[in-house]
Amino acid sequence: MTPDLSREGLAQLLALEDFSPIYEEADRVRKEAVGDTVHIRALLEFSNHCRRKCAYCGLRAPRKDLPRYRMTPEEILASVRSAFEVGYRTIVLQSGEDPWYTPKLLGEIVQEIKRTTDMAVTLGCGELSREDYALLRQAGADRYLLKHETADEDLYQSLHPDGTLRERVNCLRTLKTLGYETGSGFMVGLPGQTPDVLAKDLLLLKDIPCDMAGIGPFLPHPETPLRDAAPGSAELTRRCVALARLLLPRANLPATTALTVRGDNGRVFSGGANVVMRKITPNAYKRQYEIYPAALPDTDIPAQRKLLEDQIRALGRVPL
Ligand code: SF4
Image (cartoon, rainbow, N blue to C red; front, side, top):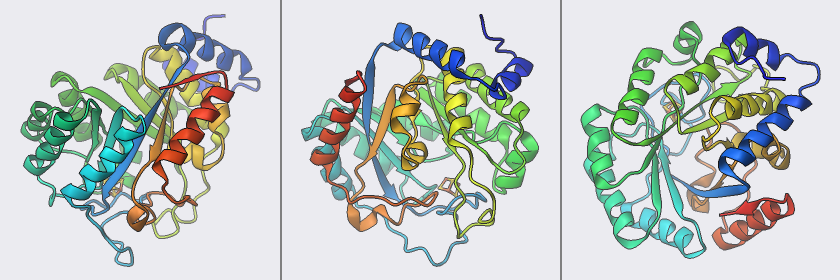
């Protein structure tokens, strides 16, 4: 059967009683389009300062109880070097929206990484102007992650008092025109979200069109306005990843950290994902970067890389 990937069709597929034929099809498409490789990315969270007030996020500006940190450029470069030495070939530099790190300073860090390693550099530092994105691209940044979080305007507005869905989508289109490999993504299980909203989320990924998409379950953080909301379903999240694979056969689809937090690593790989990210944030900072609650192990860059490679091989896939 050819799945119906229209808006109505996607909403119906998400509600199927038996989703296993779609998982099988997603796995087949993944194998045909991007092979058995699982790309392991190093994720460095270099600043937990943020000027925004996203309702679901543990880093939101109104949180006064959270100790804030900024890694120095030297600390960032030392962590990146450690990751490079054990085999990582992509570094994801992520932060809240922190204007202290000017695009010029970030660009210098990117240039230094490109000068001293052959790593691809992915940035995830929020919404910036076209000029700033262009400057970072010129400095050597290869990819940019900016999740749209929800493609429903009303839901977006209720969660993001500092911006609009239109602004976010404009940023994504700008990143594409500047030649970035562009990543978006969304949360599954947000309060008020319906299957039709998830169908819109999936179709927005295709419309951009995204080169990467991070799809993760909503996990309520106790220090946010959404503390009492129910967490998103891991199964529904996996279904969204599988449908994203059908819509975007060649995209890089991570088994997102929020899913691996829930221990579903292997199962999400079986439904179309081909990327996994491993935090390499130093222990001194790691637990202060909590967008959603997670019991994080201490960072041990070589040991965790090795463990992940073994786990990927055990699934019959090829770590890179
Ligand atoms: S989701 Fe991102 S932009 Fe929003 S408060 Fe959290 S770190 Fe800041």
